[in-house]
Length: 571
Ligand code: 6R9
View (tube, rainbow, N blue to C red):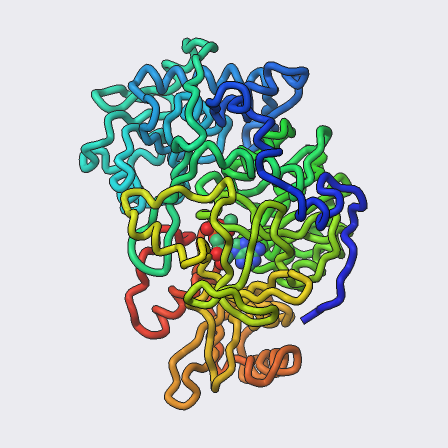
């Protein structure tokens, strides 16, 4: 473990002196900014878009959109008009406050108009990954009792319309849609829709967005967030994303993942930043080009994406100019030291790790531009957030002891419910008002948090606790290893042994020598007891759409167990 601290590259930042602000900050300060300060009511659609359209930012570009075919720009004024039009289309087909409107379509500007239009009506939006198959779509629409679904002609075949009694209308975004009792043609109505819409002013505790996420067992759960979350989206856009007026910001996440809404829509627009959205599939050339062409200054992505770019090699990156970048951030999984090194090499910037969850709604533990960074640590809690390591009874543990990463209840963007499942919601909390994340971690004597793994993934081998992440990180440093997933495999002698699933980089083939070499590499780099006893090669590893290696699937394969819910798994 690397323990020396380094200063971040940005000397000035919106956060200023972390410790001073941490000691004095109250969330009430951030609340001043929004309409409820004057009226007691609010609406995310207004705060993200209309507020700026009604200011001197009206003609500033809000959205730079591109994919293989389209290349478009929209100002805040245009976003206001177009989201109002989309809102009117939805209103005309009966959408009202509290209704669930699901969006199942690829990233295009229309998705964003419709999502914002839904919010302006006070309805609750449920974004779905376009890669979901019929079963996954059905589960989510059924559980949430969705009244309207927005989709396109290509995906419509995966919507079992007849089996969903609550689903009243399906709005189809495409050419030549044949309308019937349920199917509605979006463009037909959008073109003529009015640009003015009365915002539905809501209470800050009213429902805003429903993100389905899977646990280790059972069906996916609907995590409900309310408009109040905007306080934290706004504040972290300043402190953590470090957004300033002239920034061009790009978050690579899809809105089907919480990162693609909290930080792909809300945070950047709440502070009035220009937001880049790239549609289409991942390709290293497209991604680098997106940075170059838009002169992206702040970039938020995930380790899995960084590793894919890394794997594409230096030849690709040399073709592009990435010098516009000022601040780069990561979320979703542990940020391997290997990735940080790559970032320093190719961008001359340190990638800043941020930790949070679907359930937490916004960033909680982070590395800020203005603080001393300990490489490998997730950083420190943002001001206004209290984090600790607790045991299973909710007692706080002293520094350097591994336990449950827990957050004191009461941060603004915390989930407010698991849809239809109050008992599931309650199961997240321990006495002392601790929200328990399901991650294991420790805190060092300086208050930095170090991720160890999901609680249920920790491996006990011959009495030693091994975090799978540490082993995976070491494995991917080996030149032959592209990706690695590590599990504990039950063993009569050792309790568990470490088994590694790996995929190899191009040009490598597994041989007895290579296997031995990889094992020795981990032994030397980490510890003898951390070296995988078994290594198995896969073409690719099972991952979620947000890039997390699904260890539970590896474990199920290994032990011949049912794999559980696979709807969040990448194709
Ligand atoms: C935003 C998001 C949450 C889980 C979380 C943890 C893992 C997220 C991380 C990280 C190590 C980080 N995770 N950020 N692990 N370092 N910086 O990812 O939400 O998809 O709900 O996942 O992701 O295990 O508990 P979600």
